[in-house]
Amino acid sequence: MTTKFRRAPLPIVAAAVGAAVLLLSAGSALACATCGCTLSSDAATGFSTRQGWRINLQYDYINQNQLRHGTGTASVVPTGNELEHKTVNDYFTASLTYAPNSRWNVSVQVPYVRRDHTTYGEYDPLAPLVLTGSHSSSIGDVRIIGSYQGFLPTRNLGIQVGIKLATGPHGDSVHFSSGPDAGTPLDTSLQPGTGSTDVILGAYYYQALSQNYDGFAHATFQSAVHTTFDYRPGNRINISAGVRYMGYTSWVPQLQVNIARRTHDQGANGDAANSAGTFVYLSPGVSFHATGHTQIYGFVQLPVYQNLDGWQLAPHWTASLGVSHEF
Picture 1 (cartoon, rainbow, N blue to C red):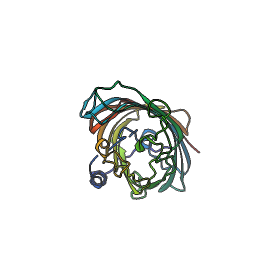
Picture 2: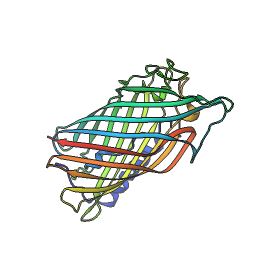
Picture 3: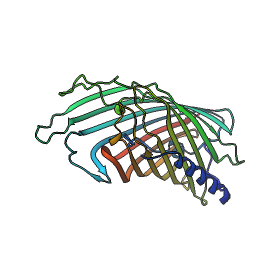
Picture 4: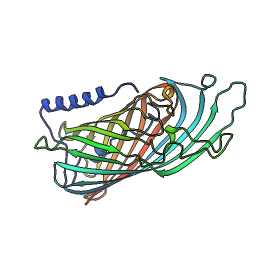
């Protein structure tokens, strides 16, 4: 079963905040494709201390259909720069977690990425705008993450260490399929995989705030340690914090604040000028206990702050749906 968040002394809260600050300081600037889902699905279903297996299936919809520059929107780019039109992302992620006891667990996350991308190519104000499009659908980069939450008797403070593998097609695997650029490789940052092996570090903490309210904080840092195709994706930091209302029997309304920050891409095949940014999302949602061991959850992410380097596509909103089962 999923444990209810428990109250802990203030020094422990300070320690958790300190861990998050350490993770933040490990990154440098910002990122391209900063617009990925930043929802904490662990918090959405409640951090679990139950021994045994847990499977989670999650769908994320991200429609990057607005061109942005800095903190505002844009309609065109400077002459000679790429004018992107739209990128529609569908992520289907299957996660399998095993916990031999209440202190340890390990999770394997396998994403399936479906992406449609259109662009006008290099912008020339004297030439007509003609779209070039691509479609990809394949397994993405697999992540393996181990967690330890044995620091406190309440098991509500944990750390995470993991690795992202280069299992998704990358480099020049996917090509444009329509328009004047048909047959040429899709941008490296838009391939289903990055081609890099990344290290993942994280920390989380949760506790009861009152009789019916629980609070949590969750931070992760991801950085490439081995790269290919002369492309290094920027470092990424995700921080989530929020509250859950536990006053109902089956329904758990909750609100998350999600922050994503990523550094510039590097390498000859990276677009450093248009690959960094910071996002802040407000994410209302709800989870439903369908049975004693099964939860269904849904969230909408609404950007309240966006600051992007260069000219990048961003979503007006994102959505996540998932189901989790313990056995």
